[in-house]
Length: 342
Ligand SMILES: C[S@@+](CC[C@H](N)C(=O)[O-])C[C@H]1O[C@@H](n2cnc3c(N)ncnc32)[C@H](O)[C@@H]1O
Ligand code: SF4
Image (cartoon, rainbow, N blue to C red; front, side, top):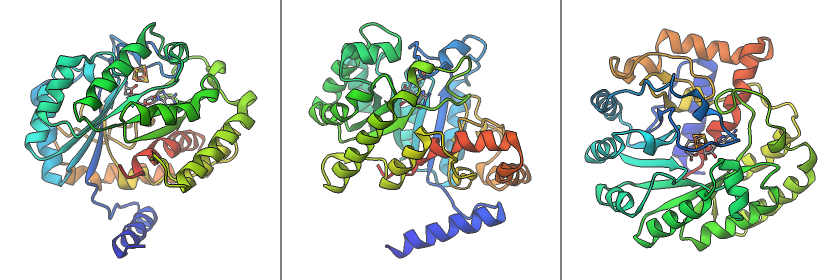
């Protein structure tokens, strides 16, 4: 293991013990909008419109980019909602690219077309993550809630990769697509993507705000999903096409789908910068406590502010406090994906 990696690990632990982060992240995740053009059954964010349509202006978002850049962020991961529903998304990507920030976006691909893809490539987008949840059009369309979504998305991915665009697939693990998870791995390869990230379906307030989604939950499919996870570990060990989830992560998913006790802590608030659609620093998308506005306050001041240290302490009390426990459960699986190297 490299000395720098060991130093980083030591710093994460020291940060956790002291509640003060010794890490200076170079990557930020940004929930640029809560608006969405899909009607997914895995995520209810689209139901929050229009009350959540309080996205910031381009000018204020540019101020945030200046702020991130001064802190040393050189990699921006833009999600949402659907990032391509944000009206000034191209101007924003352009602005960040001109500051030498590598911009990645996760998308359902519905608002893309040839012209917009050409524009993205011209501006210099670094990477796109495409959410594909089935190899059968009907499976994908069922999860996304839009007829024809699969055809549109895969056509856009093929065009993007044919023009030299770099990207990966992001796929949900759920009961509905359990039979297609390995085929998704092959599909990603076939359509020119460079890897795949699997994301187990989670019932957390960030995604699902009303009734529990029985149709997506794992109970009846545990054995099947276990087999898939074992196959993924094998494929990963054979150094085949890239699976961006780490082996420890895949193993943890086995416990997660059984609803077994998960660790009562999460390192995300010590090593991730996460921003909500109103420009606030938050510990995580699943726990959007507003720690301060990045339009107004330098990230330098917020990262180890009194408020953030208090929040980190509270999150650590997960064993005794039901609210903290729920937040930690939600926090635990989400950020592990962004710890994988891309
Ligand atoms: C919230 S979406 C935002 C970006 C974009 N709209 C998209 O769908 O790619 C980011 C990722 O979260 C995943 N996701 C949505 N709901 C989820 C859930 N309940 N559990 C786990 N992952 C979920 C999506 O599949 C997607 O890859
Ligand atoms: S997962 Fe993405 S596409 Fe689906 S509703 Fe949520 S934000 Fe929209």
